Image 1 (tube, helix red, strand yellow):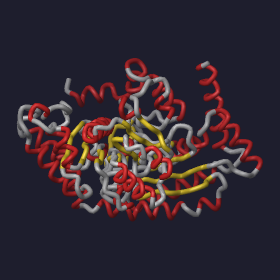
Image 2 (spheres, one colour):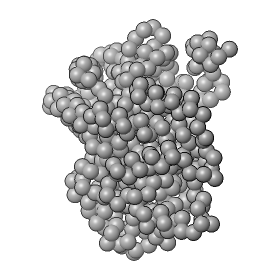
Image 3 (cartoon, one colour):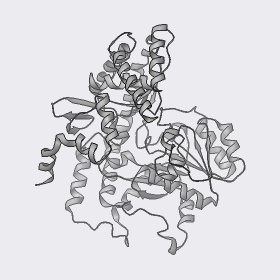
Image 4 (cartoon, helix red, strand yellow):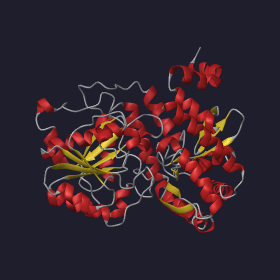
Length: 462
């Protein structure tokens, strides 16, 4: 039986297989909120289920599918490499595909980032940046931001300022210092002893889509230079056109010392991550022939990943999706902005390019306020679910809550959205936000169900 026959035969067993062999809690979540669909096909920004329904994917695999799913040029590049019988991962060799991708990345990254290290994921890229910073500076301390997210391996998690992901996994690596995002005074205090190897931050915090003041990142980079620390830009999610420029740091005129990337570089097919860094940093780490392999990743330069990266960059460059993302994202935010004045629970609409957020907060009117408090008492951030769930079940739009315990709904769609998709989003969000302000109403009946489930879960945990 070939693999396609096997998939077809077991297509509807996906939830039972995961419940038995993988993560049953994930299955419970999907069934509780009504996201338990059987997807059978994907194309561009769309998913199709076994009932023939089409869904608009504003989650895009947590930002992986910048080009949408199954872009034909990326597919063709992978097929070409698969059928060419090329040597792969010889290890005691250097491959032309990794050289070509490194050359291209050097051309599109900010000035001065002349060396590239390849890994398999965003968190591996962050781990490499931390190690490189420590070795190059001879210092051990890493400063990171409250609320930031850099990955779930131990080093990356040590720099992740979200207690939900850290709980129970300590102790973490020593010499990691947390400062508030956007606070230059706190950052200077942390750097001023001149014992910090690097400051790491997302240019825009993914958990919440928090966009800093225009002066923050330039000020942070200047402080790093003043005190001899390196500036690491984690562009794993924000990079490669997501915000309407190649890199989010370009919005702020910042040139980092190390830049981490992953997600979209894969084309949605083959895991890949990379760190672009200054030559002197790389040359300090790999400073002798006997240190040529002092840090690496077995699959980091595999042919399929390199081909996917090259094809992705070619599509982004030649098909104009980055400028398109800037314009389309700006229009969607502008279309949704008037809702802030119309609906008291909606406090803000913000974004850059195809990275957008709807922020909700406690209302003032008595009836809504009582309902809000009921949800928040059951589980902080639960209101967001009465937005994301009907967006999915009623309008077939897949989205996410922007972070644990947050009343922020996040959209990170493919860069390839069209006018019809924009109208789909605006009409759906308008309907769902309006419905969330009708008490009693269907949204709040569902909210009560979620609150009851949350309370039962808490009671069971005790």
